[in-house]
Amino acid sequence: MLNVKVRSFQREDLRQVSLIERACFRKPYPPSLLLLLARLNPQLFLVAEASGKIVGYVSALPDSREVAHLVSLAVHPEVRRVGVARKLMEELLSKLRGMGFRELRLEVRIDNFPAISLYKALGFREGRKLRGYYEDGSDALTMSLKL
Image (cartoon, rainbow, N blue to C red; front, top):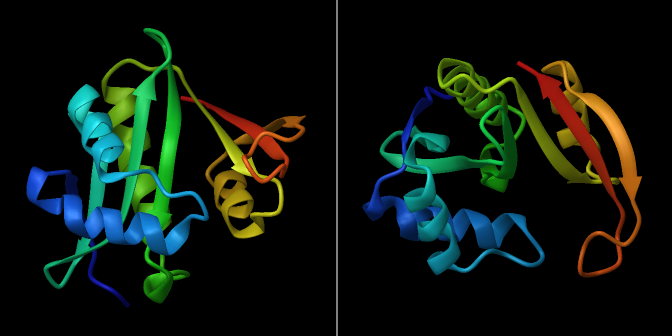
């Protein structure tokens, strides 16, 4: 089992987070956007660290005073399926509750079955399908969790 510690993002994490972003997504966010997300709401940009190396991250932003939006969740492909994403999400949900948020919303690629399964296991409910949501024309599924 991987010994993972979840903590707040720090500026010096940017290079490793960017590498994870590129390893996980077809259209990765540029480092400048990742840094902006961290600056906009530092309490809601978390990294998972194992053996001194960043292995995943999660970022969310407020949509309103009571609703937050999951911007991104990524775990390095070499350490998937060992609970890193779940640990990141549980810590994020705890922070959101502590900050007074009542709901977390997200969009997920409709064919990303591992992510959908994780979100359902955490209590998220499926919403509607968004046709052509992604740049490549793929559909997305909306999901939400009452906190």
